[in-house]
Length: 563
Ligand code: ATP
Ligand code: MG
Image (cartoon, rainbow, N blue to C red; front, side, top):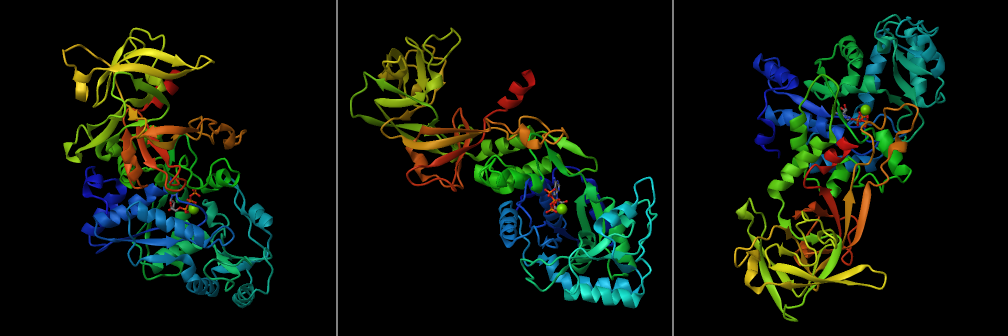
């Protein structure tokens, strides 16, 4: 579903180069990749990078990308997460067709491969405790020690593994380990655990299993069973590659996928670890996985971020081999660029101040013609009702305005965009001295907003007709954290850096009436205020809620660089 333009404009990254070479040399006739999420949380912006890469290269090279749930840890997984992940990947614009798989579908085969390893003398049941296993493993500078159970006979191992499977042995009593090399420089090769006992129901296999395979054993074999050609993962799996290859080599499998590591996406002013996102949700720091401040795909969707903007962002940051940090501004810019092209312009007054045009006929309504997109006439025009009572932004009026303030003040004239020139005559206040409304006059000769005699009117402001206005709640967002790297300070918990002002709710905004037709799929530019989208989770017919997706310009970066 992605367009070629989004991906095909850059020189090949190192992964696409490897794939192109493998196809050119005839090593593969077609390629198969996979996206392998663990269903233990919602997908975030980091996963989007992996999704765009795996599904993207499959599309570009006429290959196939599998959707595979890596569901080997029933303690933390659920089918609710499975459904959310499927929805998010589809929303991002990718389709796995018939290729939906689950590691749990392979449990029987994985078990048989484990038995084969035992028969080959390459795996054994170990009764060391978890702590002892860790201690025996040694350190980066010290080699490990062999487990006293390492040389059990094949028969004994087969019998013990069968009892593990049958549920005859309690959790934590023993594990199945690969017999590799306790002196290996790769810690991961020091007899890694392949299976553990876990008497937990699995969301797909129920109580059929009480032993579950570990990630490293499962992943390579799942890739192999699906005939994946290129298994793309993030750099932290670089060391695991030795084990990935060992399992497949030892079992002499009919095919051997190639694992290639790339740098994960790190983005500042946020956290992208499911464990930490889950804490924010469970402890109520955010309203849920889809809180519009979260950089989860469901949060970005609810906020109104177009999926094309996320694909554009992923294409912009590219694929490399070195860890790096991407500025949040890069994501915001990708969103802004997409919205700038496509979002129709409308008027929305976020903090209304009433004005009365004292020389405008009572009960008269006109329809003003407004452009939907000044740079894109194809988007057409619309009619916006205008009347004697209007709302403007409170910030567009200043009582004691400096010379350079080109908006409204007593005795000054501004242009109401697409409507008339108006002059403020009088400020009306309540008993406490608070401004309640402005009395202004309009120039009937200036319809459309043009000056009838060439007199200069610098300021142009937006407005909404008061009796026609649609009342709505508008939510403005800022970054969820106040520091670039909330995880940097090891002494402090990342939650200490939560931004207390990340959500600003404006409860009584006045929007142009055409917005009554908005759905959660539509994005608008509220002129001068940013891009907005209806929140279809919390809106009700009586109380529509709009989210600000992003501001018009990167004002945030400017402010933060001066403090
Ligand atoms: P988390 O650290 O958020 O828990 P994870 O790696 O445990 O993420 P998985 O569900 O295992 O989450 O991830 C599925 C795929 O997405 C993996 O191939 C993983 O490498 C990739 N992935 C996860 N986070 C990122 C990221 N920040 N950048 C790029 N790819 C990522
Ligand atoms: Mg993982």
